[in-house]
Image (cartoon, rainbow, N blue to C red):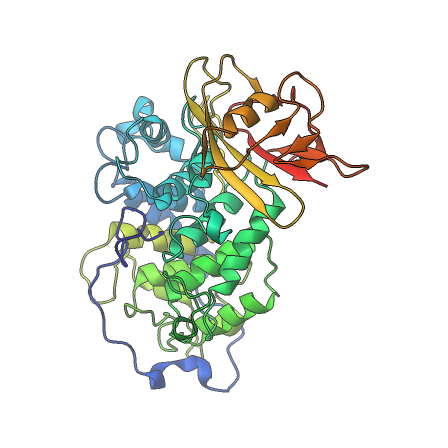
Length: 481
């Protein structure tokens, strides 16, 4: 999953592949360039895929600790949650020895709510990891607890000087996973929670980082001809494709088609594997297939069924131990890899990077869990965007301490003037008190039919008033239109 700022192979506090480099397969072995008739039928049958899912889920259940946890210090097994969800297993149903009091969802939610999580020096990918896995587990990422709002945590890493980037722009990985987290982690009702203006800014940055060959890498390439001319990376191409598609870009878009062609050019005819930067391995293949899945592109037909009759799904299933269920990192390995198993199972099960949680089978367990209201006196954060209609977008995390179960828009905007990250999200609001209509924000005043409007969690924009009720975890968008 998303790589950290400091280490190329790491993926948001976990390594999903070994750092050693494998010899690249010779270009002559790549079957995608041979111009002959491609077989018409997929080779992995629904029954084979179903067996792979069943055995893969069984293996991932063995990774659960005795206390019910999947996450802790060091490498993070909580990425299993996205694979469980894709395979149709609710995370709340995963419990050691059947002890429902230690189910994986409850234990993970408690961890996310801990004040010291994720660390003393967090990076944006920590919160993206939390968002993606909380969502897959059926935890509303904006309402983890009275104090934890993962969407607001991500908003706090917005780059004012380079709108659309999250975290240092040199680590493009932080921006592509912002798109996956913010676009993929929908509301409980299945709708988008962030405004289109924000989505558009992120999409523009993803497009600008696409290399000349149609792929992407983990680092920034925008505006750098040398970087743009470098080869793309199979992993980040899959992630970037998914980032665009969960943001609403259709799979017929030219940038998606170029990325699809890039992956096609990496296919190894004899196995259906993608020849990745680190050689042929299950994790890279899993990322590429998840990208195709997110874009609604079948990885078993057409361009991804090789001349030898193999597909990327065939390759992944061939790396799985049965009945053990774990997947090898690379074909020569003799033991399964926890992280490759997560990447591979999610892909084989048809998942993108952000699968929605399935309905639990545990009696009485809800599909979603979420904080229902603010706790008076408990500090929290809210996610806020301010769009003045000129193309300038302010994005921030607003810190406030509510005095009741709900608050109002006027209180949130007042807090934003002095306690927003990044700073400067809101500089002035008129009127500064009362309950009436907001007539000016940041010096931009209502005029005629052009007025300030507000949307909450993706709702339709309506007139902005100071007494607009704001609840815990609400994602707030102000727009002048």
